[in-house]
Structures are given as structure tokens and as C-alpha cells.
Length: 197
Image 1: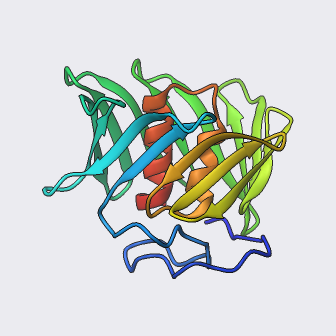
Image 2 (image 1 turned 90 degrees about the vertical axis):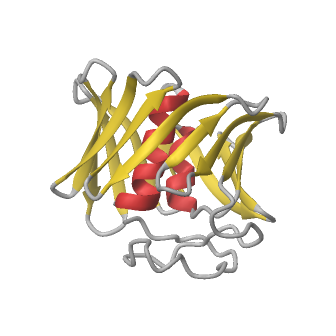
Image 3 (image 1 turned 30 degrees about the vertical axis):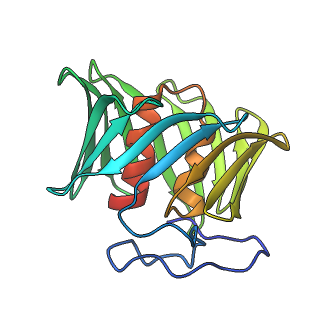
């Protein structure tokens, strides 16, 4: 997993079920299981990722309507829309993962480089992102995840692009900066890194 390299104070340790390969910061003020709220650059709610009692997550739009569900397995995450059609999946691979589109085509590949750096390449091998803990680049632009009260703020080229409110470490939160992906793909990637990887 990625390691947090920023100089901000660390939040409480990740839950016992989370990977233990990094001392990553987490948003401190949301209760475990409260879910995540994703806000855009104008602080407008765009998506809720809410845990289900039987496992997995529900995806809700800003008005609270169900738009999908996320299932989590030991080596993969699948996201289906409200009608039950597969929209995205992420599978664990040696030292990394692959994100697949609804048609099972590869969208991107992520691979650890060393112990702390994540390189993400598109299906054609083009570099999409290099992430190192709470910072990196996405399509050549600098990105950063900052722990804030109640969540994590995502900045791209020093401008806020999103806020994730809830119990989330900076590493999976930073993946929300991959704005070329649709919300189903970003949710799949975020939950995969948060829960599986």
C-alpha cells in the first residue's frame, strides 16, 4: 500500500481489517460504518457510498436515490448500477490491480513501484498517474490529498476538486483525482484500495 509522507499529524490508525502496510492518515470524526460522502469543488454533494448491513456498499446520488451497489470479495470489487448491470470491477493482480469497464475491457492497470509508489497506466500503456502516499501527478498535474476535519480534501494543480467526508485514508481518497473515470469506476477503485488491497 502507499505510505503517507506528508508532515501533517496522523489521524487514528486504520481499522483492523485494513491493510497494515502503511501508517496512513484517516479522517477522524466520522464513525466507522457511516459511509462516505463525495462533494465536488463547490462543496455540493455528488455521491454517497453507504455500507450495507450484509456487506458491500450502496451508491446513492445527491438526492439519496440508489444508483448502484458495490460488492467486495477477497480479491476484487464489483460495481453494478441500480438496474443490476455491471459497470466496473477491479481485480487484484501481482503487485497491483486492473480496473475493467462494463464490457470487461481493461481501463487501467495499477502497480506498486517499490513500497510506496503507485503507477497507474491506461489500457494502451500510457501513464495516467504516479502516486506516492498523499501526493502525486494525474495526467501531468500535481495532486494532493489533505486530511481535513471530517474527511480528506483532494486538490489538483493546487485547486480543490473534491472532498471525501467520512472514514477514509489519504491513499484511496487520492484516487478520486482520476477524473477521467466515471463515478462507478472511481467508486470501484476507491473501495478496492480501501477494502481489498
